[in-house]
Amino acid sequence: MAETAASVPSAASPSTGVVVGESPTARGRRARIALRALQVLIALFFAVASALPKLIGHASAVESFAEIGWGSAGMYTIGFLELAGAIALLTPVLQSVSAMALSALMVGAFVVQVTVFDGEYAATPLILIVPLALIAWARRGQNAELARLLRRGPA
Image (cartoon, rainbow, N blue to C red; front, side, top):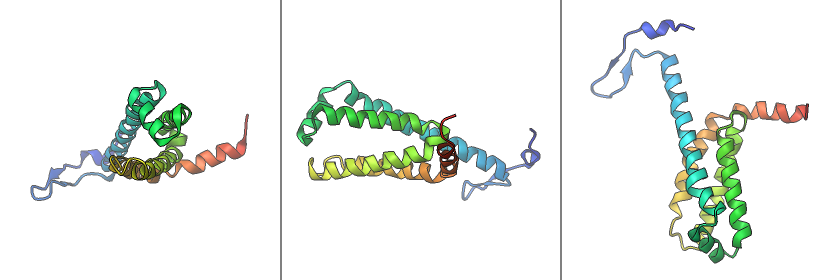
């Protein structure tokens, strides 16, 4: 599929750094690529940096959940939810719902950080909510497809 707008010359404005004369198709394509890259990075963070230590019972995770009072059952549950969210974040029909669910999990993490750990790492969940909200909003169109699939039921 050839794009006719691709032949339009573009030049960067020296004062703003904005590309002038760029086709909307090219901007949209770059935005989709950037959003997908963000999703992959967030999914990797949740899977590797957050879920994995909980699922393998790393000492730091065990200690944190013992301090919260949730023990190993809570640790494995949260780890599983984070891993499931990371996988769903990369699944087209589940992207928006996953971002919303992970945001809710981060709200809970923020509350725990503030109440149990005196706000020591309270900024981390708040920082993660920002890209998750962006993903949820940008992929909101997938929610209609998910609803349609759920109404249709098992094949």
